[in-house]
Amino acid sequence: MKTQTLGKYRWTICALLFFATTVNYLDRQVLSLLKPTLEEKFGWSNSDYADIAAIFQFVYAISMLFAGRIVDKLGTKWGYAWAIIIWSIGAIIHAYSIAIGEAIIATLGWIGIAAVPVSVIGFMFSRTILAIGEAGNFPAAIKATAEYFPKKERSLATGIFNSGANVGAVLAPLTVPWIAGHWGWAAAFEIIGAIGLLWLIFWFIFYEKPEKQKRLSAEELAYINSDQDEGASVAEIAAKTETVKEKVSWFKLLGYKQTWAFTVGKFMTDGVWWFFLFWLPAYLKDQYGIVDEGIMLPLAVLYSMTMVGSIGGGWFPKYFIDKGYAPYDGRMKAMLMIAVIPLVVLLAQPLGHYSFWMPVILIGIGASAHQAWSANIFTTVSDMFPKKAVGSVVGIGGMAGGLGGVVITKIGGYLFDYYQALGHIETGYTIMFAICAVAYLIAWAIMKALVPKMKLVQI
Picture 1 (cartoon, rainbow, N blue to C red):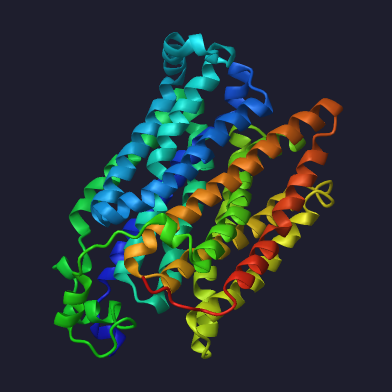
Picture 2 (picture 1 turned 90 degrees about the vertical axis):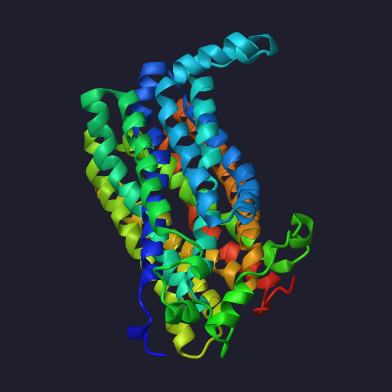
């Protein structure tokens, strides 16, 4: 079947996923960019900020477990829609965190919550709502990718939509400080938060399940399903796709080593990205005195680098697959090579005395490797599990990744307060960069030990 006769509507869906992921990361990064402003205004310590960041990660982790299940139950269209409605509301209400904190203290002060600063309570609540909604993004996007792409294209499609995280991370430092500088910190949360509601319009116009999508040609539908249904007619493929939804219990999924391989890989490595996302503005301020609009260029450069990793990482396994490797084997070979790259982050502090651009570039390389890793680890799920279980497995792994992020964030907050009190906070960052550098090789070794060879899960 010639590619030019297929049609390209599946890439329209990929574009929608890309823009949703861009909005997802725009919303979550506003807080980290405003940290210097907010900590000065409200007197936060590093541990206060770590608590606010950690509650997002913790709730995100738990919500990921249920988000995957809900997306599987509601279907991709409505599961994604509800996710972005909730997280957009959560992003907007950050602007009203003080009033929210006062209301919570007035209601629950009798259980001792009044001991926590009002601003911290309010922001923790806002981050909680944001986390509940944002948890739906990746289960829904991965499910949509599994629906609209054959296995051989999924890592590339995942890499493309996942690069939206990098675009969001680039756009945030270019817009948030400017908005906050001209209209105040609250306006930054309101304006950025409202963007997701605009995306919904396009989602409802352009998305439908492949077998019901009138804009999708019969040839493209057959191609999408070709690696599961070699030789089947379009009618047969459609009939198979319309099978009754079955519930697959979490306990049953946890009985598979494939689930644990994905879960451990996410737990070990997601926290690295969280650390870069939430602490880099603080790092540039603490060690180099870069704040406000001065932070725009270095962060924009750093996260622009990660787009190369995301898209390149999605393409990389295809190189090995084209050479005859099975999809899983080619992916794992690529992931091993990717896992070595973050070791360059070990040089960020030793070389930082030359210029702040040295750690920016080196951390950018490490963050690029994370995005390449992320594009592939997500795709291992659709490699090994049937479509009906993809959302749930991604949710389980996402929960583990979020919990890993909580651990990294709390360790970081403690170390930075401890070493700041001793007068050399740079030691805290050195320790954290070392943890980030080695996490991927450890994760790959455990994943390979659990699933040494590809085996499709039969449920």
